[in-house]
View 1: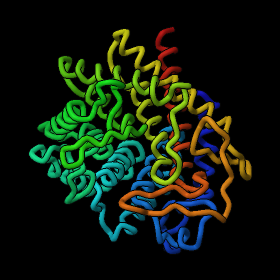
View 2: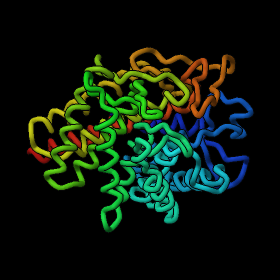
View 3: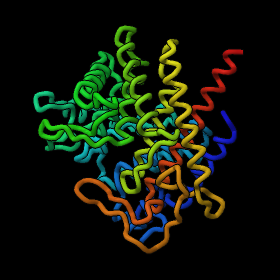
View 4: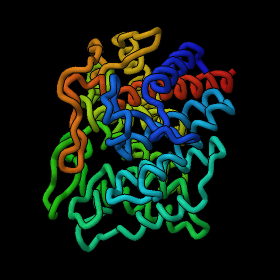
Length: 383
Protein backbone atom coordinates (compact mmCIF):
# COMPACT_ATOMS: atom_id res chain seq x y z
CA UNK A 1 0.00 0.00 0.00
CA UNK A 2 1.21 3.50 -0.85
CA UNK A 3 1.93 5.12 2.53
CA UNK A 4 1.02 8.57 1.21
CA UNK A 5 -2.57 7.51 0.47
CA UNK A 6 -2.78 5.47 3.67
CA UNK A 7 -1.83 8.58 5.66
CA UNK A 8 -4.35 10.72 3.78
CA UNK A 9 -7.10 8.14 4.34
CA UNK A 10 -6.23 8.02 8.05
CA UNK A 11 -6.45 11.83 8.26
CA UNK A 12 -9.83 11.74 6.52
CA UNK A 13 -11.08 9.12 8.96
CA UNK A 14 -9.88 11.22 11.91
CA UNK A 15 -11.62 14.32 10.51
CA UNK A 16 -15.01 12.61 10.19
CA UNK A 17 -14.61 10.78 13.50
CA UNK A 18 -13.78 13.95 15.44
CA UNK A 19 -16.31 16.26 13.80
CA UNK A 20 -19.28 13.95 13.30
CA UNK A 21 -19.34 10.84 15.52
CA UNK A 22 -21.54 11.27 18.61
CA UNK A 23 -23.62 9.16 20.97
CA UNK A 24 -27.28 8.86 20.05
CA UNK A 25 -29.28 10.84 22.63
CA UNK A 26 -26.41 10.42 25.10
CA UNK A 27 -26.97 6.65 25.32
CA UNK A 28 -23.84 4.66 26.27
CA UNK A 29 -22.49 2.26 23.64
CA UNK A 30 -24.13 4.14 20.76
CA UNK A 31 -22.75 6.12 17.83
CA UNK A 32 -24.06 7.85 14.71
CA UNK A 33 -22.76 10.56 12.42
CA UNK A 34 -24.11 14.07 13.08
CA UNK A 35 -25.23 15.13 9.59
CA UNK A 36 -23.54 18.55 9.60
CA UNK A 37 -20.48 20.41 10.85
CA UNK A 38 -20.78 22.92 12.39
CA UNK A 39 -23.95 21.34 13.78
CA UNK A 40 -27.21 22.87 14.99
CA UNK A 41 -28.86 21.63 18.19
CA UNK A 42 -31.34 19.65 16.08
CA UNK A 43 -28.43 17.98 14.24
CA UNK A 44 -26.70 17.06 17.49
CA UNK A 45 -29.92 15.54 18.81
CA UNK A 46 -30.30 13.47 15.64
CA UNK A 47 -33.62 15.06 14.77
CA UNK A 48 -32.36 14.36 11.26
CA UNK A 49 -30.02 11.44 10.63
CA UNK A 50 -30.39 10.29 6.99
CA UNK A 51 -30.43 6.47 6.94
CA UNK A 52 -28.38 6.13 3.75
CA UNK A 53 -25.67 8.59 4.83
CA UNK A 54 -25.15 6.48 7.96
CA UNK A 55 -24.82 3.38 5.78
CA UNK A 56 -21.95 5.04 3.90
CA UNK A 57 -20.36 6.09 7.18
CA UNK A 58 -20.42 2.42 8.18
CA UNK A 59 -18.93 1.45 4.81
CA UNK A 60 -16.12 3.99 5.26
CA UNK A 61 -15.34 2.60 8.72
CA UNK A 62 -15.10 -0.85 7.14
CA UNK A 63 -12.75 0.58 4.47
CA UNK A 64 -10.54 1.89 7.27
CA UNK A 65 -10.59 -1.48 9.03
CA UNK A 66 -9.46 -3.13 5.80
CA UNK A 67 -6.61 -0.62 5.51
CA UNK A 68 -5.51 -0.69 9.15
CA UNK A 69 -7.22 -3.28 11.38
CA UNK A 70 -7.74 -2.05 14.95
CA UNK A 71 -9.83 -3.44 17.84
CA UNK A 72 -11.01 0.11 18.70
CA UNK A 73 -12.41 0.55 15.20
CA UNK A 74 -14.29 -2.73 15.36
CA UNK A 75 -15.99 -1.31 18.45
CA UNK A 76 -16.97 1.78 16.42
CA UNK A 77 -18.29 -0.43 13.61
CA UNK A 78 -20.35 -2.47 16.06
CA UNK A 79 -21.74 0.68 17.67
CA UNK A 80 -22.62 2.16 14.29
CA UNK A 81 -24.51 -0.99 13.30
CA UNK A 82 -26.34 -1.23 16.63
CA UNK A 83 -27.28 2.44 16.69
CA UNK A 84 -28.51 2.47 13.09
CA UNK A 85 -31.14 -0.08 14.08
CA UNK A 86 -32.05 1.80 17.28
CA UNK A 87 -32.54 5.14 15.46
CA UNK A 88 -34.56 3.33 12.76
CA UNK A 89 -37.18 2.30 15.37
CA UNK A 90 -35.41 -1.00 16.12
CA UNK A 91 -35.69 -2.15 12.51
CA UNK A 92 -33.39 -2.60 9.52
CA UNK A 93 -36.24 -1.91 7.09
CA UNK A 94 -37.55 1.37 5.72
CA UNK A 95 -39.63 2.42 2.70
CA UNK A 96 -36.73 3.10 0.31
CA UNK A 97 -35.10 0.19 -1.50
CA UNK A 98 -31.99 2.21 -2.34
CA UNK A 99 -31.51 3.08 1.37
CA UNK A 100 -31.83 -0.57 2.36
CA UNK A 101 -29.44 -1.64 -0.39
CA UNK A 102 -26.71 0.69 0.91
CA UNK A 103 -27.18 -0.64 4.43
CA UNK A 104 -27.12 -4.24 3.19
CA UNK A 105 -23.83 -3.64 1.34
CA UNK A 106 -22.25 -2.07 4.42
CA UNK A 107 -23.51 -4.82 6.77
CA UNK A 108 -22.25 -7.57 4.46
CA UNK A 109 -18.78 -5.97 4.38
CA UNK A 110 -18.82 -5.34 8.15
CA UNK A 111 -19.40 -9.06 8.69
CA UNK A 112 -16.87 -10.24 6.09
CA UNK A 113 -14.06 -7.77 6.80
CA UNK A 114 -14.52 -6.69 10.42
CA UNK A 115 -16.29 -9.74 11.87
CA UNK A 116 -19.24 -7.61 13.03
CA UNK A 117 -22.26 -9.76 12.20
CA UNK A 118 -26.03 -9.34 12.39
CA UNK A 119 -27.15 -12.71 11.11
CA UNK A 120 -30.85 -11.90 10.86
CA UNK A 121 -30.36 -8.57 9.07
CA UNK A 122 -28.87 -9.79 5.79
CA UNK A 123 -31.49 -12.43 4.88
CA UNK A 124 -34.24 -9.97 5.85
CA UNK A 125 -32.81 -7.28 3.57
CA UNK A 126 -32.14 -9.74 0.73
CA UNK A 127 -35.77 -10.83 0.93
CA UNK A 128 -36.87 -7.20 0.47
CA UNK A 129 -34.99 -6.91 -2.83
CA UNK A 130 -35.97 -10.29 -4.22
CA UNK A 131 -39.67 -9.73 -3.56
CA UNK A 132 -39.63 -6.17 -4.97
CA UNK A 133 -38.76 -7.39 -8.49
CA UNK A 134 -41.69 -6.46 -10.77
CA UNK A 135 -40.91 -6.86 -14.49
CA UNK A 136 -44.65 -6.77 -15.23
CA UNK A 137 -44.64 -3.09 -14.12
CA UNK A 138 -41.55 -2.21 -16.15
CA UNK A 139 -38.91 -2.91 -13.45
CA UNK A 140 -36.47 -3.67 -11.93
CA UNK A 141 -37.15 -2.97 -8.31
CA UNK A 142 -38.68 0.41 -7.45
CA UNK A 143 -36.97 3.29 -5.70
CA UNK A 144 -39.38 3.03 -2.79
CA UNK A 145 -42.37 0.97 -1.76
CA UNK A 146 -45.68 1.63 -3.54
CA UNK A 147 -43.86 3.59 -6.23
CA UNK A 148 -43.60 3.24 -10.01
CA UNK A 149 -40.12 4.77 -10.31
CA UNK A 150 -37.57 2.08 -11.22
CA UNK A 151 -34.04 3.44 -11.11
CA UNK A 152 -30.34 2.63 -11.21
CA UNK A 153 -29.72 3.89 -7.64
CA UNK A 154 -31.98 1.12 -6.28
CA UNK A 155 -31.21 -1.71 -8.71
CA UNK A 156 -27.45 -1.12 -8.82
CA UNK A 157 -26.57 -1.46 -5.13
CA UNK A 158 -29.26 -4.09 -4.50
CA UNK A 159 -27.78 -6.11 -7.36
CA UNK A 160 -24.23 -5.75 -6.00
CA UNK A 161 -25.44 -6.99 -2.63
CA UNK A 162 -27.33 -9.97 -4.08
CA UNK A 163 -24.26 -10.94 -6.14
CA UNK A 164 -22.05 -10.88 -3.05
CA UNK A 165 -24.60 -12.47 -0.72
CA UNK A 166 -25.34 -15.40 -2.95
CA UNK A 167 -27.27 -18.43 -1.69
CA UNK A 168 -26.55 -22.13 -2.21
CA UNK A 169 -28.83 -22.43 -5.25
CA UNK A 170 -27.46 -19.28 -6.88
CA UNK A 171 -30.87 -17.60 -6.98
CA UNK A 172 -29.60 -14.28 -5.68
CA UNK A 173 -26.71 -14.23 -8.15
CA UNK A 174 -29.19 -15.01 -10.93
CA UNK A 175 -31.42 -12.13 -9.81
CA UNK A 176 -28.39 -9.80 -9.74
CA UNK A 177 -27.75 -10.80 -13.36
CA UNK A 178 -31.37 -10.06 -14.27
CA UNK A 179 -31.07 -6.63 -12.65
CA UNK A 180 -27.92 -5.87 -14.65
CA UNK A 181 -29.61 -7.02 -17.86
CA UNK A 182 -32.65 -4.84 -17.08
CA UNK A 183 -30.42 -1.77 -16.59
CA UNK A 184 -28.50 -2.51 -19.79
CA UNK A 185 -31.69 -3.01 -21.78
CA UNK A 186 -33.59 -0.03 -20.31
CA UNK A 187 -31.30 2.69 -19.00
CA UNK A 188 -28.22 2.97 -21.25
CA UNK A 189 -27.94 6.13 -23.34
CA UNK A 190 -27.27 4.94 -26.92
CA UNK A 191 -25.26 8.08 -27.67
CA UNK A 192 -22.96 8.45 -24.65
CA UNK A 193 -23.27 4.91 -23.18
CA UNK A 194 -23.87 6.50 -19.77
CA UNK A 195 -26.63 5.26 -17.45
CA UNK A 196 -29.90 7.18 -17.26
CA UNK A 197 -31.49 7.62 -13.83
CA UNK A 198 -34.56 5.42 -14.30
CA UNK A 199 -38.05 5.00 -15.71
CA UNK A 200 -41.24 6.39 -14.19
CA UNK A 201 -44.60 5.10 -15.41
CA UNK A 202 -42.60 3.51 -18.27
CA UNK A 203 -41.20 6.91 -19.37
CA UNK A 204 -37.44 7.47 -19.32
CA UNK A 205 -36.02 9.85 -16.70
CA UNK A 206 -33.01 11.07 -18.63
CA UNK A 207 -30.95 12.62 -15.80
CA UNK A 208 -27.42 11.17 -15.66
CA UNK A 209 -25.75 11.16 -12.24
CA UNK A 210 -22.23 10.04 -11.46
CA UNK A 211 -23.31 7.53 -8.85
CA UNK A 212 -25.63 5.78 -11.32
CA UNK A 213 -22.51 5.00 -13.34
CA UNK A 214 -20.71 3.88 -10.20
CA UNK A 215 -23.30 1.36 -9.03
CA UNK A 216 -23.67 -0.15 -12.51
CA UNK A 217 -19.88 -0.51 -12.75
CA UNK A 218 -19.96 -2.25 -9.38
CA UNK A 219 -22.76 -4.60 -10.38
CA UNK A 220 -21.25 -5.56 -13.74
CA UNK A 221 -17.80 -6.04 -12.18
CA UNK A 222 -19.17 -8.34 -9.47
CA UNK A 223 -20.99 -10.38 -12.11
CA UNK A 224 -17.90 -10.55 -14.33
CA UNK A 225 -15.95 -11.87 -11.32
CA UNK A 226 -18.58 -14.43 -10.26
CA UNK A 227 -19.98 -15.97 -13.44
CA UNK A 228 -18.82 -18.51 -16.02
CA UNK A 229 -16.74 -17.57 -19.05
CA UNK A 230 -19.60 -17.05 -21.52
CA UNK A 231 -21.62 -14.76 -19.23
CA UNK A 232 -18.47 -13.08 -17.87
CA UNK A 233 -17.59 -11.76 -21.32
CA UNK A 234 -20.94 -9.97 -21.59
CA UNK A 235 -20.59 -8.27 -18.21
CA UNK A 236 -16.93 -7.35 -18.76
CA UNK A 237 -17.79 -5.73 -22.12
CA UNK A 238 -20.33 -3.52 -20.35
CA UNK A 239 -17.67 -2.49 -17.82
CA UNK A 240 -15.25 -1.59 -20.64
CA UNK A 241 -17.90 0.55 -22.33
CA UNK A 242 -19.02 2.34 -19.17
CA UNK A 243 -15.54 3.08 -17.82
CA UNK A 244 -14.72 4.73 -21.16
CA UNK A 245 -17.98 6.73 -21.04
CA UNK A 246 -17.29 7.92 -17.49
CA UNK A 247 -13.78 8.97 -18.48
CA UNK A 248 -15.08 10.92 -21.46
CA UNK A 249 -18.22 12.53 -20.05
CA UNK A 250 -18.01 12.58 -16.23
CA UNK A 251 -14.29 12.97 -15.61
CA UNK A 252 -13.09 14.74 -18.79
CA UNK A 253 -10.22 16.44 -16.92
CA UNK A 254 -9.47 13.23 -15.00
CA UNK A 255 -11.47 14.37 -11.95
CA UNK A 256 -14.94 12.96 -11.20
CA UNK A 257 -17.59 15.68 -11.38
CA UNK A 258 -19.05 16.83 -8.08
CA UNK A 259 -22.72 16.62 -7.17
CA UNK A 260 -22.93 19.47 -4.67
CA UNK A 261 -24.09 18.83 -1.10
CA UNK A 262 -27.04 17.04 0.44
CA UNK A 263 -27.54 13.59 -1.08
CA UNK A 264 -25.47 14.72 -4.06
CA UNK A 265 -22.46 14.97 -1.77
CA UNK A 266 -22.15 11.18 -1.82
CA UNK A 267 -22.39 10.75 -5.59
CA UNK A 268 -18.73 11.24 -6.57
CA UNK A 269 -17.45 9.15 -3.65
CA UNK A 270 -19.68 6.24 -4.65
CA UNK A 271 -18.39 6.53 -8.22
CA UNK A 272 -14.80 6.43 -6.92
CA UNK A 273 -15.55 3.38 -4.76
CA UNK A 274 -16.76 1.33 -7.71
CA UNK A 275 -14.12 2.59 -10.13
CA UNK A 276 -11.66 1.25 -7.55
CA UNK A 277 -13.54 -2.06 -7.60
CA UNK A 278 -13.08 -2.20 -11.38
CA UNK A 279 -9.35 -1.49 -10.98
CA UNK A 280 -8.87 -4.21 -8.36
CA UNK A 281 -11.47 -6.87 -9.22
CA UNK A 282 -12.37 -6.90 -12.92
CA UNK A 283 -11.04 -10.26 -14.18
CA UNK A 284 -9.52 -11.00 -17.56
CA UNK A 285 -6.26 -10.69 -19.48
CA UNK A 286 -7.48 -9.02 -22.66
CA UNK A 287 -6.29 -5.58 -23.75
CA UNK A 288 -9.80 -4.22 -23.11
CA UNK A 289 -9.77 -5.58 -19.56
CA UNK A 290 -6.39 -3.95 -18.89
CA UNK A 291 -7.49 -0.62 -20.37
CA UNK A 292 -10.64 -0.56 -18.20
CA UNK A 293 -8.67 -1.33 -15.03
CA UNK A 294 -5.96 1.22 -15.85
CA UNK A 295 -8.49 3.94 -16.77
CA UNK A 296 -10.49 3.34 -13.60
CA UNK A 297 -7.33 3.48 -11.47
CA UNK A 298 -6.15 6.68 -13.17
CA UNK A 299 -9.49 8.46 -12.60
CA UNK A 300 -9.47 7.50 -8.90
CA UNK A 301 -5.91 8.71 -8.35
CA UNK A 302 -6.31 11.91 -10.36
CA UNK A 303 -9.53 12.72 -8.46
CA UNK A 304 -7.90 11.95 -5.12
CA UNK A 305 -4.89 14.17 -5.84
CA UNK A 306 -7.13 17.03 -6.91
CA UNK A 307 -9.49 16.68 -3.92
CA UNK A 308 -6.54 16.66 -1.54
CA UNK A 309 -4.87 19.64 -3.21
CA UNK A 310 -8.11 21.67 -2.98
CA UNK A 311 -8.99 20.74 0.62
CA UNK A 312 -9.10 23.12 3.55
CA UNK A 313 -7.31 22.19 6.76
CA UNK A 314 -9.03 22.70 10.12
CA UNK A 315 -7.19 21.77 13.33
CA UNK A 316 -4.71 19.83 11.23
CA UNK A 317 -7.37 17.67 9.53
CA UNK A 318 -8.83 17.86 6.00
CA UNK A 319 -12.15 19.38 5.04
CA UNK A 320 -13.05 18.35 1.49
CA UNK A 321 -14.86 20.36 -1.14
CA UNK A 322 -18.11 19.32 -2.80
CA UNK A 323 -16.30 19.70 -6.14
CA UNK A 324 -12.87 18.11 -6.20
CA UNK A 325 -11.47 20.42 -8.88
CA UNK A 326 -11.98 23.67 -6.92
CA UNK A 327 -11.06 24.97 -3.49
CA UNK A 328 -13.17 23.79 -0.56
CA UNK A 329 -15.15 26.45 1.29
CA UNK A 330 -15.17 26.59 5.07
CA UNK A 331 -18.75 26.30 6.40
CA UNK A 332 -19.98 28.50 9.24
CA UNK A 333 -23.04 28.53 11.49
CA UNK A 334 -25.04 30.78 9.13
CA UNK A 335 -26.70 30.12 5.79
CA UNK A 336 -29.45 27.76 4.69
CA UNK A 337 -29.22 24.24 6.13
CA UNK A 338 -29.78 20.97 4.27
CA UNK A 339 -33.47 20.06 3.97
CA UNK A 340 -35.36 16.83 3.32
CA UNK A 341 -37.74 17.42 0.41
CA UNK A 342 -39.66 14.84 -1.62
CA UNK A 343 -37.59 11.87 -0.51
CA UNK A 344 -34.20 13.56 -1.03
CA UNK A 345 -31.87 15.73 1.06
CA UNK A 346 -31.09 19.08 -0.58
CA UNK A 347 -27.74 20.79 -0.05
CA UNK A 348 -26.78 23.23 2.65
CA UNK A 349 -25.94 26.70 1.34
CA UNK A 350 -22.27 25.82 1.89
CA UNK A 351 -22.24 22.14 0.82
CA UNK A 352 -19.02 21.38 2.70
CA UNK A 353 -21.13 21.56 5.87
CA UNK A 354 -22.91 18.32 4.94
CA UNK A 355 -21.47 15.04 6.26
CA UNK A 356 -22.19 13.50 2.84
CA UNK A 357 -19.50 15.69 1.24
CA UNK A 358 -16.91 14.72 3.86
CA UNK A 359 -17.78 11.01 3.59
CA UNK A 360 -17.24 11.26 -0.16
CA UNK A 361 -13.76 12.70 0.36
CA UNK A 362 -12.92 9.96 2.86
CA UNK A 363 -14.31 7.31 0.49
CA UNK A 364 -12.10 8.68 -2.28
CA UNK A 365 -8.94 8.50 -0.14
CA UNK A 366 -9.72 4.88 0.79
CA UNK A 367 -10.31 4.13 -2.92
CA UNK A 368 -6.90 5.61 -3.74
CA UNK A 369 -5.39 3.34 -1.06
CA UNK A 370 -7.04 0.31 -2.60
CA UNK A 371 -5.91 0.96 -6.16
CA UNK A 372 -2.32 1.69 -5.12
CA UNK A 373 -2.25 -1.44 -2.96
CA UNK A 374 -3.45 -3.48 -5.93
CA UNK A 375 -0.92 -1.96 -8.36
CA UNK A 376 1.89 -2.58 -5.84
CA UNK A 377 0.79 -6.21 -5.58
CA UNK A 378 0.78 -6.52 -9.39
CA UNK A 379 4.24 -4.95 -9.61
CA UNK A 380 5.61 -7.47 -7.11
CA UNK A 381 3.92 -10.33 -8.99
CA UNK A 382 5.59 -9.26 -12.22
CA UNK A 383 9.08 -9.28 -10.69
